[in-house]
Image (cartoon, rainbow, N blue to C red; front, side, top):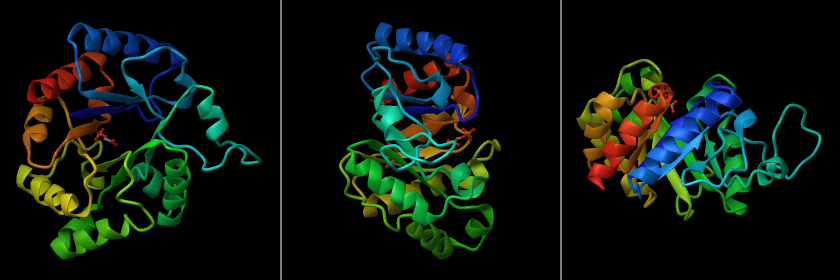
Length: 234
Ligand code: PGA
């Protein structure tokens, strides 16, 4: 199983250090062999030796250069970061990233050998249009994405389920993940209002290889609880 925590624009550097101390000691004390990835804000990146992977939530697809306000490869290399989240719905819908931008990021970081957690997911109005519209929408989010990239992890996160407490039914998650499985051999994560109470059930579903957790992962103890649930299933 793969269990990921996406901090978004939450937690200071100090809070992240305290959080990582809890999660890292939990992972060693329990001999967890599942993949655990934490995506802190850039300001909390560190050089520590880790048993937990650290990824970034975004980056600009260049080595370095005149891109005011952006973080590029050179700055990630300084922290030995080789894992990145691309295509998250907040970047697509709030920060206005187009499929073209997302695909350019994908190409650049794939060429650099990064592990890419690539997110797709539909807004509510698309889901309400029915299955065909839903699958078309998701397929368009794979435009320009190499689904055979060996270090790809795909995360299905319905926009309407992120941070809302709403989740699709287990049947709907299985249907969608079944359709994704036909497109790619990559591990498939579910994300969108995953919490301690539903993580275990979601991870038992067919074609679900892990979870990507936002708000409920902000508590280190709750995140450890979800890691433990994953480990029990592995
Ligand atoms: P959530 O966020 O768990 O708060 O719904 C998930 C995500 O955005 O990755």
